[in-house]
View 1 (spheres, rainbow, N blue to C red):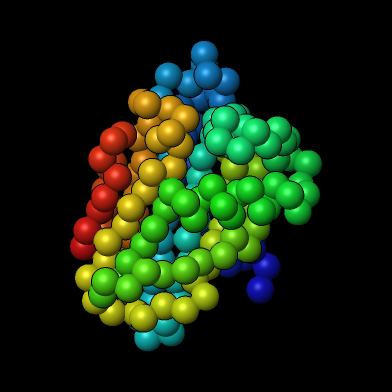
View 2: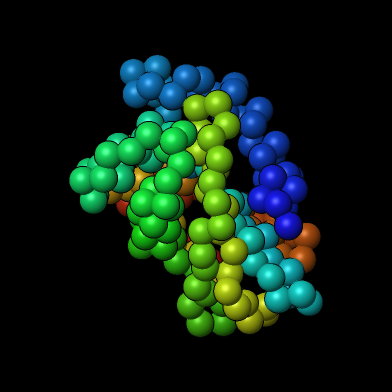
Length: 170
């Protein structure tokens, strides 16, 4: 299944938000540092899909600061995939019923000033309380805010996590 088709709903959910409130991606032009993480679970099918949207320049700078990896994400390469996988999994953890959920980067795409990273769980228990730890870009931007939207079987829960607050429970 193509990434574009699988996550088509994710792409448009927050497009208006970013256009109205965040503007351009240069640090001097966007006074807000916000990422959006959408997590969609289906307990019957035991699937979990994750979509993270971050400003491309902030993400590239964070990769350089953390790993000394200089990249232009628009020029895709396997090394960028490996560093994105590492960066995201170190800063985004999900537990369901007290068990950690492991996930893999299945791809990313650049859309205007933002990078969408798409991930999916290798296995997903499906039911139980959910705890999400989201520290994306916190180590790079002290004023970072992460919006988290968790969809369980179609029902949405949303959280605003402002650095250093990183945990959402449902």
